[in-house]
Image (tube, rainbow, N blue to C red; front, side):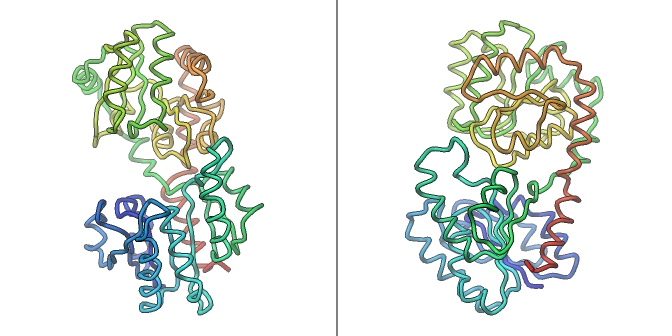
Length: 372
């Protein structure tokens, strides 16, 4: 088969390395179409023999480059005769499905993976006004619509007109990498020392961008209300909220308990020196970091939202409403007191549902069925 992957920006392709390497090893041809102006495709794809084509789509639905991208994608598909065109991210998916209307009549199958619709229960009205009509229209030109959480799956089955709607829980993670990572006692002590965290502290960890949606602020406010100096909170990630969060921690009097770690390439070890994982977001599709934490054996304290609720239940952690400080405080207090051994075992076992092997098997089956 000849397959074309389409994303809005090149960096998104980082999520699909296992998919594409497996497809190439099976003898299929895989090319990529994306905008590399601000975010490059990883070098491994070109090393593997994939052609990478520049298209001018933008994250903004009103950008004129999207019209050009439709034409560019249409030309690519017409010239190269792809059996499958698999699009990801909302704008690239819109451009792709409009570009392939005629190609589908000639046998090309269009797949779209929705990594969390921008419209969801509790989403701003403008998200429904802008994105819902686009997805509704484009669903008529979709052979297989893949959703990664149950809320999106139910909505797509009920409201959209794709030939087939499938539920595939995420893009897969390397479960073994996180489950089997070992940190010796000396390394545990050294890592905590380097991060200025006491050896006997109860450590909460978050991994992700420092932005308003990630809602780290509520954790800081909850910790300040608990008034326990043994609780330390560390975040691995970068973003525009860095200075705000540091200032807030100082204002709340917990600056010595708060640790911004910046970008890290050793997150598998950070999970092992933490006592619990916290994911307080307002919106998610299906958060990879929560899956990693589960595979690492951490109990999880997460907001009650789409995606988080697909992963974490009362056997593996605690949930709270993302706007309510008191609920977050209660959840953190409960994880402090909990018997975490059973939660650890439960989350490790449950994480297998989201493993690379499981997800790859589902995707390969869908491709081989060609949407029929």
